[in-house]
Image (cartoon, rainbow, N blue to C red):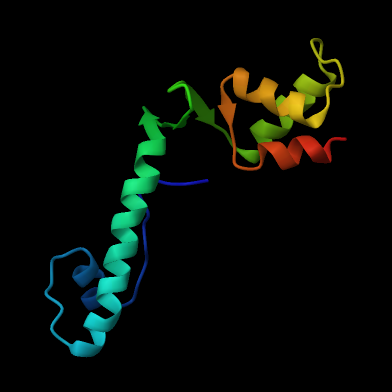
Length: 120
């Protein structure tokens, strides 16, 4: 799953503050690493942030049709798959059909397709 914000822990405040733009990178050796990292951060922000949004405390993936798909935990995903596959409305669908039903129901997790295939 992608994220719009990444929290990094480091024991070097110098490096952290250089990446955050609060300190200037003066050492040639550090500049060698600083520029590739800065490019990666910029690319990450352009690609990932537009795919996800938050509403309150919930994370949503913005779907192809601009619909919002709620990102859920593994435990929630397991329950949803069991309900779709075997629940009152379940009809023991194939993996592809089951994954499509999950998305139509408005849910998302990164391994939805492989999880549906494992159920068969």
